[in-house]
Image (cartoon, rainbow, N blue to C red):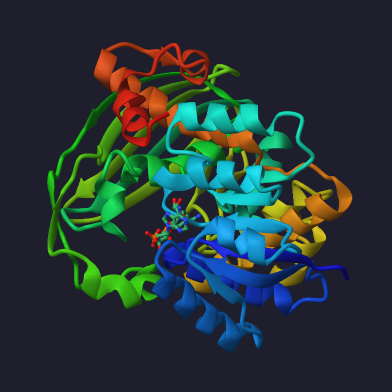
Length: 417
Ligand SMILES: NC(=O)c1ccc[n+]([C@@H]2O[C@H](COP(=O)([O-])OP(=O)(O)OC[C@H]3O[C@@H](n4cnc5c(N)ncnc54)[C@H](O)[C@@H]3O)[C@@H](O)[C@H]2O)c1
């Protein structure tokens, strides 16, 4: 199979996770990507990812400290995978498109709507692929959720309730997730949530919200989390405390275009017991999900039938079939649960993203999560933040058109856009 020569740009935590995704793809007979280079402003990080790649893939990619030199020295390079911090995405993606490269960018496409709109304008009419690496929806259980909702398993959806609480006053993953100009934790995690909710229930029309920096001082944690292993190498560099400028707590009321009502609480400063609850209610039942990358089954209740066991849920969607790469990696054409660790599931989903990028380049197929879909996920998050600032409901339309952009004005000023 033809393999697209690709470079990973951004060799931090997610760069390492993407490398593991590539190893997963290399292990299948559907591999259509080849890692030929890695790039980071910090050459030591690029060298260290290149070393790891040699260990994992059996071949050392070249390491670079900037995109332009890499492009000049590697004229056969066709694509980049942008895994830099979110604040820098619009600059790196724009430079890569200018250099004639196909791009897959980690979510969000940019940390501002202005950044998304500039990239959309730059990309218009181009034959280069611009895809956004949003892996949650690709999880087989999230695919099943979509299939069940589309098949009317709970009737007509009416209400979505979603709450996440945790984090306390710890630095969550890495310091930049508490800095507004680079990409706060609400947006960083929230775009996954808003992508999923719109994938399942259609577009959001309006948001009314409160938002706050509940924990202005964040402390380095010694506790391990699911993502710790990817950041271990840089843990010592992390300051003991940081002053947070990005909101960590948002309470939002949502109205979907379909009329579905939603309540979404993202409380990333909660002490004590953590909470994850995500349920969708319809005219004939309810569906509760445990989210992505854990393989836990859905809880489906139908009026008059009670709880539907996971295997029986599959009978409600007899035509459902995962795409070939997902079925290969997860071992079945559809499933109601799976037994994998977070890290195992994560790298399989990244492998699916890479494979789709390769297919889009080779067959001119459109990516599932394109610039518009990614902008919409960001727009719901920014609508919440703008609404909190303005004390009024805000529509997604006014956010995407940049008619309402007070919240992001200083982020745009910081990046000079
Ligand atoms: N999909 C997911 O589950 C998931 C999880 C974590 C992070 N992410 C996303 O991945 C991205 C990276 O996050 P991370 O946690 O790996 O960040 P990180 O801070 O660990 O790594 C970012 C790296 O990018 C480098 N960099 C910054 N600007 C650059 C530039 N112009 N050119 C080259 N290198 C540059 C930095 O030096 C750093 O090494 C973010 O957008 C984040 O939202 C996604």
